[in-house]
Length: 427
Image (cartoon, rainbow, N blue to C red):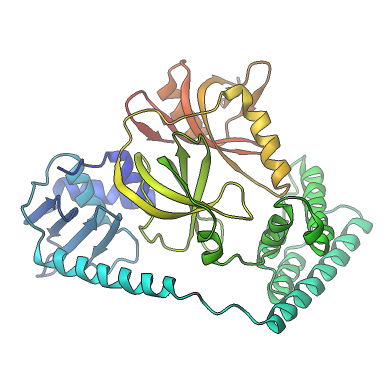
């Protein structure tokens, strides 16, 4: 029988906390005239009575996972799907010998779409012409020259917080120059003037931007993959087929965290996978609404990952050899005291990196005396960012060493999940 998801896994795929709250209420008090879970094909289905005469039909393809609901909600997955998953996790959904008619029809449509996608993938897209590539290169070069002049003017006039309108115009010009990634970095230049450390932060941002401006014309001369990193940080795209052409890394991948950044435009979803044998972390990145193609946290999956040629911690999911199963053991982690070395190596490979996914096997947390928490590294310590997440991890740890999942940043560690001895708990 298909193993039910945990409550944490259900919460991890929710679009926001409000959806989880609404789903809990609906799972407990809603009217569900039909529910069932089928093992082959692995599908969860249910009908929830709403205000209208016709019940809403909620469906979950557990092999994806993917979801569908007949309700008009724009949230994906909606509260009906989440409530159905919660009922399943609590043992309230009976086994069914076969899927419902609605589930069968939906799975058929998904199979047909997957077949069309496979056909398109088998036909390589037409590469841009040399003339188009040259025009793009000229636009990017002109945009970076203009950015360099703007940065020089800002520093020459004396360090001050740039005005929002000036930043917006500079970012818009870079978008027009087909350099969207560096445009997003410029868009985030504005800092709080009441922050006493703002001059240092601003100068650091200026320096990293100027480093890109200087490095881009010489990208082909840079060692290793650094040239590809520079082009990606400016905004030159890497086609999906190029990434999928990279030699795959097959492993049993533990899905240890999912982080949604709602401040980015578009919204970005980062799924953190950790290889049991390789001991490496990779992130699957999605933008916009979640497609449901990536595995959910708290599971393990035997699959191929194709590393991104211009990002040491990013990959695309390739062939899935076996369906995802619940994570039963603590994910493989690095010693906590090696975190500074891991961060140094990551920054050496990509100086513009803002975060790096890590799994620490023997993390010890201690209070900082001011209501926050620190990660103990032996002779040193690192702040845990986000007090509520840090408190949650500390409560699970209970003073003991734990396996901690997070993103290392220049300011500290952002905790994402912690292993409580039996399961992965999202922070």
